[in-house]
Length: 407
Image (tube, rainbow, N blue to C red):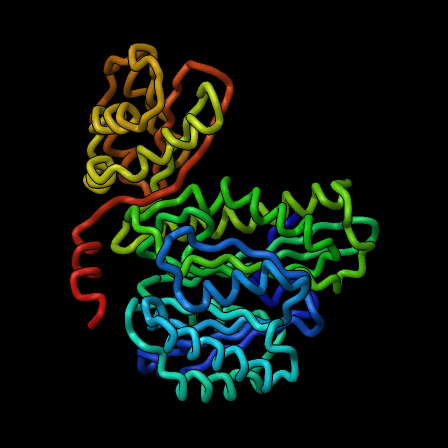
């Protein structure tokens, strides 16, 4: 397997486009379209927030009831959430416009929106934007990049990843894009993500891969402990690689799982590092936990602690905050035997041994914490399980960004 450049257009048979529809933003693209030239097996996972945006309700029904889909249209600026029947009607109108322009069935069109909650989607602008999108569809890398940029809100960078592997004489590609910088504390996926692949695989296995992997990738990130109303991960597999359809968990399946997980973990980490106002990616790995569930809970407890996040921002080796966060996680463990390390750029420092501070150098600790990617490692000494969660530091700019987000 090798990582290649590109995103949603890297796999065979996929095209993308972006346009400025003036949904809310001016002077930038704010609508994107991803299209499979042939019907594709579709899978997805969505927010567990009881408050679900109109596009989430629409997409969940399609993923549950349809084997194939062929397109997804996405807009940024307005979330089309908490908009009741008016929002549902606007969302269907947007999907119908795509279906009409591409001459495909309505039920093969997914939708996604991100932005301000409670604002009505300007349907006329969206429909006009769709008319502009379809003629621009292209399978170029640039088209994929523009689509990734169009779905950004407070993101500072676009987020893409693509990988390839060989199996039985066929080159199989998995590519994806995501957006998300704030309101990131997923319990299914992430703010918005689209993954495309040219592998031939059954819908049942595709959905199983997506559902299983999310607990190791997008569900392991947090920026601000707020789960969005619009979280959506949509995956398309169009079979254009030409391999025999995978219907059992054979070697091809295992290779696909590895490639798919590389894409999702890469996107997840980029999202965490691009948290609103963040200056660094903060990773926490729990080792030797009693169970995987314990390791997950412990790692998330550390990366979501505001006191830990502010210490990471200040390059302060305040290890007591990390131990404290482990302690209130709800997991039973012996704090008297815990070891704690920090690591970055190849340098590793033990701060705590058997529950007590070591004679570490504060200067060395500060140097390690000053890197753009910092890892905390907690050895619980209770078993063999491990888990890693990704977050970011908490800065003044997070408050500034969210203090006037609507305006």
